[in-house]
Length: 179
Image (cartoon, rainbow, N blue to C red; front, top):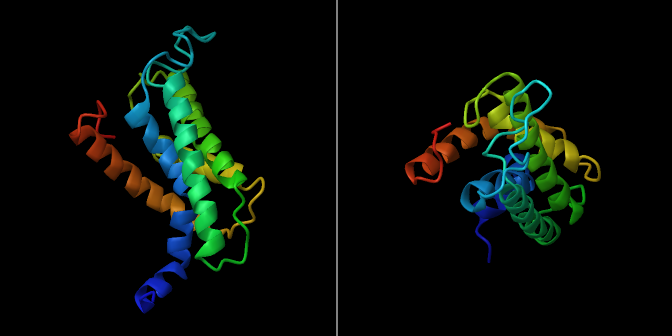
């Protein structure tokens, strides 16, 4: 028997929104744990003489982010089909699209930072905190008709969670900077 407080929780729009975007959050976290190796830009410079992406965007990190988010997407798809009663379908492609969108948003953020002459590991407020979630949700929108309220719920949450996760990663020695 499921406790009544749990039933109320899983019927909550906030809970559903958070659970729905778990693929994007996992995609943003797993490169910190499993990244490293060859930079995606092969240490090449753009036309402006600056690095294209920098050392922190690696092939292994991109792949880890994508795979981690996709696996979480499979779980989320199952969860929404079997436990939560939502008025829309969360297809398996949601995890694929969200995770690909999240890692792409992170790469786009790095590209923009290099153009603004912000060094690798430097901060670009807002883009660093929500770029992954905006791209993840935008890509997910391709085949999921989720409520617009998810955007309103998740974007501010991503700001807070991003700072908290990075502080933990920094404390654990997984990141070089706290932001």
